Length: 329
Image (tube, rainbow, N blue to C red; front, side, top):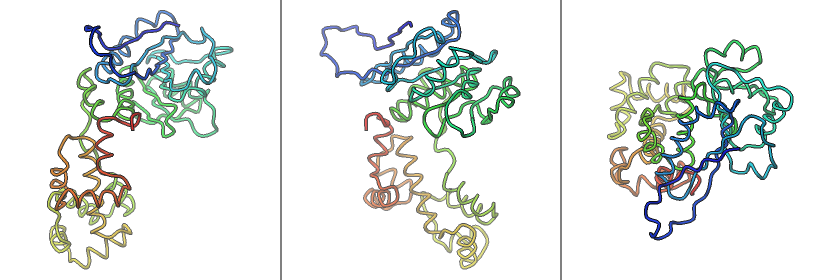
C-alpha cells in the first residue's frame, strides 16, 4: 500500500507550532497498479482541502484490490474508502477479491463507489433494495444484477455509509458534499470555487413548500398561495392581503388551505420564514440582524426566540455549522 500525505506547506519551520491535527485517512482502492496515474483529481482535491483547514490533515492511501489484508475492524475507524472505478469497465471481483471487498464494505464507516465500482453494492450486507448512481453505460447490467439506478450522477446514502458517483468527475462533487457535512458549508463553498467545481445553489427549493404541495395533491390555490408567501417573506402579508393576491375571500382561502394541507396559513408563513432564516445562516455571511430583517422579524431577539421554538436549537448553532461542520461541534 502506498501512502500519500497531502498537507500544508511548511515554509517557516521556526514559527510557533500549530495545534495538534486530527489525521483522517482516505483509502483509494484501484483495480490495477496502472490505475495509479488516474488518481490525481483526488490528490488535488485533498491537497486543496488541507490548505483550507487547520485542525485536520487528510492522508491519501492507495491500495490495489485485495493486494493487502483487510485488517482489523479498529483499523477502519474513521477511515473513508473510495473504490476508484471508471465509466468503461464494471467491477465483478471473484474468489478472494470478492471476500475482500465485502469485508471492506462492511467495516468502513464511509464508502464511495465510483463508475463501474458501483456494482460492488451487491456485495454489501443487508436485505433491502440496492440503490446507487449508475452510469448510463452500466444501467442494463445493473438492472440484471438487481441494482437500481437513482437517476442522478451522485447518490448520498441516507445511512451515511455506502455512497456512489457514476463517474470520476461527479465523484468530486460528492466528496465536496462530505466536506460540507464534516467541516461546514463555508469550507465546502470555498473548496468548490478553488478547485473549479460548479458553485452550489443558493437557497435551493423549499422543503416546506414541497411537503405541503404533495399533501394538497397539487391543489392550484395552495400552490399559488405558497408561491406568494415565498415571494413576500421579507414583508409578510396579512391574511386579507394574501387572499386578494390569490383571488379569493379570506374565509374561503383559510378553509380550503386548512382542508388541503392540514395546516393554518399563519403557521405556514412562520415556518417558511424560519426555513429561510436557517438557509441564510447556513449559506451566507449576513449578520443576524440583517437575517431577521430579510425574513420579516421585528428584531434579532424575536427571530431567535421563534427559531429556538421551532428547531430546538439556537441560530448561533446553524451559523457555526457553516464554518465548522459536524466534526468540530
